[in-house]
Image 1 (spheres, rainbow, N blue to C red):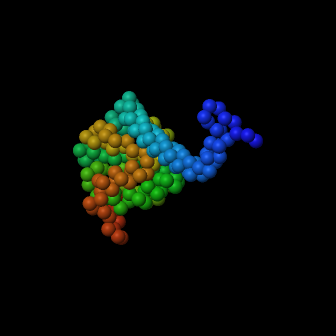
Image 2 (image 1 turned 120 degrees about the horizontal axis):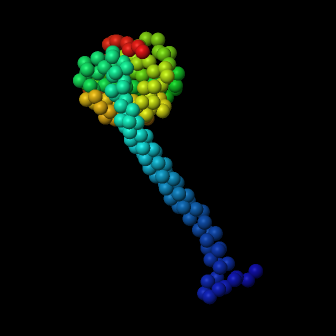
Image 3 (image 1 turned 180 degrees about the vertical axis):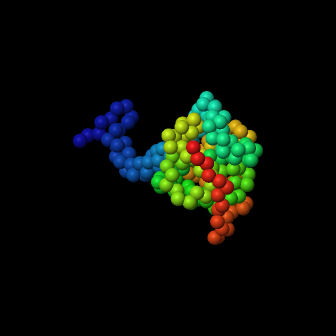
Length: 200
């Protein structure tokens, strides 16, 4: 079949060149496309996490979550007062694989972190048999709703009686505890003492 020539362009000849270069061109294009997809995913996750964190702040502020919690749970209010209003609410469900992993990862940092922030677990289910930190039972998930928490594991940092941070990823939670408790890790065989137990 004769080449189709328009002007000075021989399309059949050029198509043959394109076919010879196709594997390399395709490899480059696939690489660029993969890179763009990865960047898009990372940006999306960052925006989602930021949005959810801001959503948590907004919901907590609208619901007066901190004041509401302190008013409904006098023991928690006393606990917060003992720590100058600096406490961490760690929302966990020990029947959740991700929660169990987060707990294992942060366990060694809890004692040191709790010297700066009082740490309390907020549990909607009480499958944990031996409490190692203060427990706030949240069977109806009312506390979770007030703080804008939609899934576990999540945590709320209350600093000076105000919500300072909302973290809803395993990595973020572990990084926070490592940063605030890494200097005094729990030694092998040391038992984590429970400072008390909160009930409804």
